[in-house]
Amino acid sequence: MASRLSSILLRPNLQTLSHLTRAMSSEVLFQHTGKVGLITLDRQRALNALNAPMVEEMTKKLKEWRTEDEVEVVCIEGAGTKAFCAGGDVVSITKKDEDESVALNFFHDEFQMNHMIGTYSKVYVALIHGITMGGGVGLSVHGKYRVATEKSLYAMPETAIGYFPDVGGTYFLSRLPQPYGMFLGLTGHRLKGADLKHLGIATHFTSVENLPALKADILTSNASNIESVLARHEVELSPPFSLDPHEDLIKHCFSADSVPEIISRLQQDGSEFAGKLVKSLLRMSPRSLVLTHRLLSIAPSKTYEECFTMEFCAAHQIVRSGEFMEGVRALLVDKDNTPAWNPAKIEDVTEDMIQEYFVDRTRTWKPLEL
Image (cartoon, rainbow, N blue to C red; front, side, top):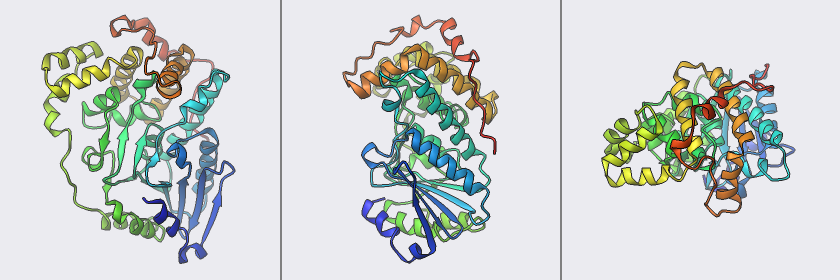
C-alpha cells in the first residue's frame, strides 16, 4: 500500500479510538483499535527485513494480545509501497566480528515467533502486499488468513545463499500441491500477484487500489465477522496461474528422488524454461540443494512442531559449516556473486555431510511456553 495512504489511515477518526505505540526498536508499530491489534513493520529502507529487536518486540506483543479479551483479531502489514517483509536481516547476523551464537539466537527466537503464529488463539490476518520472502513468509503463511495483491512478490530464495527454506518452510512447502513445494524450495522461483492465491499461499486476493478500504474495515472488525470482511473485498483472479504452461515439466522433474536426477530430467527436457532452471540450480549451494530436498522429503511425516525442531537442528549445523556465511558474503555483502561453495559440485555432497544436519546439538529448540 502506498506510504501516503498508510499514513492517512493512521490519522482518521479511528485514531481517537485507538492506542498506538512504537516499540523500542523504532522499527515496528503496534496499534490497538476496538477488537483489532495491528502490527506494522516499519523498516522501509531495508524492505521491512526482520532483525532481532523486531522479533523480540513482536513476540512480546503477540503474547500480550493473546491473553487480552479486547483483542480478537491481529493484523500484520508492512509500511511503504515496496515490501511486506523481505526476510530476515541475514547480513546483520553473519558479520565477521560476530560469533555463530548471534545467528543461532536469532533463528531460535524467530522460529518460536513463527510457531506461535501458527498456533495462535486469535484470528491472524497478514496483508502480504509487496515483497514477501523468507522471514516475511514465516510471518504470514502460518496465520489463518493471508491477503495478496497484484503487487505481491513471493519467494523462498535461501538455497542461493547457502541456507534452506526455514521459518516453518519445510512444513508449508511440503503441504502445497506437489511437487510445487519442492520446486519453489529448491529454485527460489518468484511468484507474483494472483499466483499466490492460485497455489494456496494466499487465502484471499484484492487489488492495491482496494487495500486502504480493506484495512479500514479490518480495523473495525472482530472474530465473528472478519471472514465476511475479507470476502467482501476479494477481486476476481487475473491472470491465470503463471506456472500452468510448465505443469507437466515441474511434475515430472521435481518429483525425482534426488537433486542430480532433477537436474538430469531438466537437461533432458531441453526447453527454454528447463534450461533456465538448470542454470539457476547450478549457481546455488550444492549442499543446500541436497539438504533442502531431504528436508522437504521428510517433512510430510512431521508435525508442525517437529518441522521447526528439524529446521533448528539443520540451522545449527549450516551456521557452523560456514556455507551460509559464505553465501551471504558473496551475494549480499561483497556482491561479487562468486560464492566458494564447499563442496563445489552436487555429486560431491555425501550422505555423511547431510546426516550431520539431523544430529541433535547441545542447544535444542522448543516452542514458547504460553
